[in-house]
Length: 236
Image (cartoon, rainbow, N blue to C red; front, top):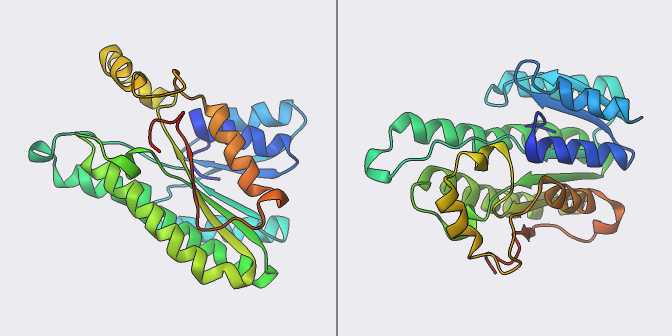
């Protein structure tokens, strides 16, 4: 899984490992080492891999290495994501390009590489981490909203392509979740957003990890092309 260094990504990696998966934790540099150490210290199986998901060559090498080491690839979680928030009139082209490259194009590259072994083995689970912003929009996040909305359309189309091979493709769309990314939001903004959540609280990384774990399980074998919204009712 990508983006495994912290927050939602780390919680997903730990949850999948606790369910018996051997998790390949992907992040830039040594950022996934702490996640891997946490998993192995708890008796789970994990390996840390350094890779830039915007580098197609690195992604191909990553998937090839996983197959050579483990013989198959059962689950792909595309979680790596960034924000470059700015009002549209002030947004730089680089702010747009970087977000699209990391949040959307990297998912395309990952899925294309992972599908080859999944189709051969006639099984697989692909789960992409979207966002409530991709469903409802948000001022100052045109680039992020576009990337996450695009991810939903991409996964729905892909789900139709590969269903006959028993590969499922779904999106988990978190709402406002307590992570390092949301720490940058002002308290006033958090209060305003929280007021829009019927369940009356922000989500936790564990909430998202539980949804991913379900979609990765045998219990979700008849679910594909869906967006599982984990947002406390913020968007219905």
